[in-house]
Length: 208
Image (cartoon, rainbow, N blue to C red; front, top):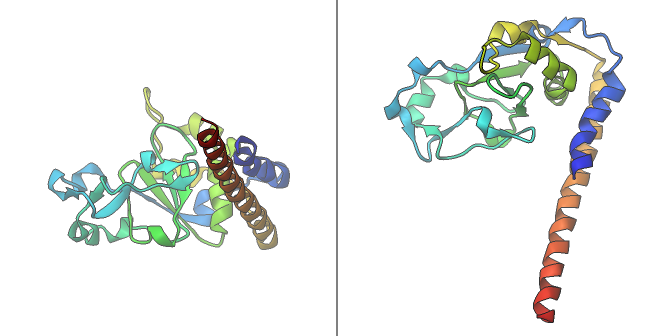
């Protein structure tokens, strides 16, 4: 599993490591910073409402919403510009640089939190955009460019100005297809691991 988790970075580096990073994120995506704290108040937060996606809800390159961190539907309706659409890339702007996840159908309508930014693809494959912002090269760039003496902190201007490669559509699609293969292999590996653990428990039960 550890090898499979690092494989996407290797595929990205192999395919695009020598590519020109002459474009910027603003050339390929619309960038929207999450709502500032003044737009949200204590009474807006509820359990089981519209989930917020903050950096803590981005785990292993995926969005992991928590119903304990949500706001009322009424408040979410008033913050339409911060609501997610499938294909959006949510980038954490505090703490660990390069932490990002892609919004799927199940995340449609959720809210980008104060500590995150929305990157909405514009003429670029969202899978490729996610790979760009989570790449080792981009992480290093964000760490150099980030603001804040005690904790790295990104803003919309820094993200818009970040360098970005823009390969052909065919190359982006090939990359996305390879990542889908890795995802399938990882899912099968997890299932096999679960089966192994169940078998071990069964043998242990019979033996003792």
